[in-house]
Structure formats: C-alpha cells, structure tokens
Amino acid sequence: MTIIIKNSNILLKKVTSKGDVLYMVNLNEFKNYLISCSKSKNTISSYISDLEQYFSQYSTLSRENILKYKNSLSSSSASTINRKLTSLKQYNEYLSSIKQVDGIYVLKEDFIKQQSKGNPTDVTTKQVEKFLQRVLTKDVDYKSRNIAIIFLIANTGIRRSECCNLLLKNIDLENNEMIVIGKGNKERTVLLTDKVVELIKNYLVDRNKSRYKDSPYLFVSERGEKLRPETINDIFDYYSTPKNKIRPHQLRHNYASTVVENNILTLPELQNQLGHSNINTTGLYTHARKDTIKKKINKLCIGY
Image (tube, rainbow, N blue to C red):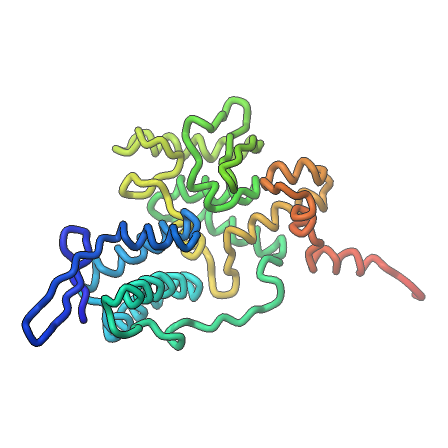
C-alpha cells in the first residue's frame, strides 16, 4: 500500500493480483472525521497543514519515509517534531480504520521523550529579558512582524491562537486597545502599552508595502495567509537557545506573574486580559516565581 499525491488530493494505491486499484481520499474526508472526534479547529488545522507539508516532500506514506521525514526535522524542537508525527499517526490510524492501509507506520518509538525540568512555565525575569533582547537584535526576515508578535504576547498575555486570529479592523492603536476573540468565540477588550503600539505601527509600515496588505488578519505569513499557532512556535524556536528556550505560554505566565508581583493589575483586571471565564484559573497563573520567592527569603534575618 502506498499513498500518492495528485492535485492536492491523496490517492491510495493498492496493488492487487489483478493490477492497481486506486482510491481517492480527499483531505476533507479526514477533516470531517476529526470533527466527528470533537477535535478543535486549531488541532484540525495543524493536522491538515502537517500532512500537506509531509506530502509535499514524500509521495508515499511508508515506514522508510517517516524516518526520513523525522530526520529532516532535526533542527526543530522536540515538541514540534512530536506534533508533526502525531498528525501523521492520526491520519495513518484513520486510513487503517477505513481499511485503506494494512499497517501503522508511525510507531511509539519515533516520538522524542521530553524530560520535565520543574514547572515548564516557571521562567525567571532574567531569562525573559535575555530572550526579548535576542528578538530585538537578531537580524532576520520578517523582523518587524516577529518583534510585534513576541512583544504583544509578552505584554498582554494573549494566547498564541488568539494572536493568529487578530483582525486588523479590531486593532485600535489610537486608544491602545484591541478586540481579542478567545475560547468559545468570546470577545474581550485587551489593553496595549505604548511600546507595543509603537512596535505594531512599525510592523504595519512593512506590512502595507507587501502584496498581502489587504488581508483581514493583522499577522500574515510570507504567503499572505493567516498565521498558524505552530508558526508562532517556530518563531519562538528561532530566537531560543538550548539554555534559554522560551515558549509562548511561558510569556503568558510571566506576564501574569509580573503584573501581580508589581501590583499593576488586580486579579479581576488580569482575568479580563487573559480571557479566563473563571477567576480561580487566573489565580493559578499568578503563582510566585522561584526567583521572586528567593529574593523575599533572602531578606529574612531570623536569629542573626
């Protein structure tokens, strides 16, 4: 059994004793299957995008090609590699369920084991500052866009999916605010700092010179498409180092911890900024960081 790409559709080619029998399987059928499994829109979009990427490089779904594909992703983070393999495994299992393939080509051993080192969201102020400094100084393509994205997340705490879904018409730079569409399609107004407004304006200058200036979305890819959450992950990966790897969700947590530690926002105000329906969830985001706790403990002089 092999899988062949033709006109953006996937053809299953089954070799039989009577010759070749072709089955047309459109990715829309797989998408409908994912919907029936109650997968989120972002998950479905990621799966389809990952499949398109794989089949743009390999004409067949086979054990050999899976290993080659994984090897080609060696410069990506473990989480990115595992996500792409998960997409292929999910599709492989779907084909198996409809009797279109006989085997599973993505195995458990293909996934990269990731060791947890404490709380993954617990980053120090110094780590964040070093990361943001690299973002500002590193010379890359789409620099103004990347800076605007990262500093927007760092200074508002919005989710990466919310960042991708930002509409140009919902950005009010005159009043330092924007409308964010969060979980459950709930809208909320998020306030922006003067510095973030400045960075977005810098990006818009470059954006308005591009052929994609008419896109309804604030942030667009090099092909003029709405950014995917995985693309934002890749942007963060580019600026990270092995010793200082920062993820979008860590900046969200850092924002929450910082505004609370410095008494900038009350918990209800922070709840709105983060888009939490339950204020107890907001409380989980504001746990004191280890470096902050250490500074407080060092001020103690009990017994000496």
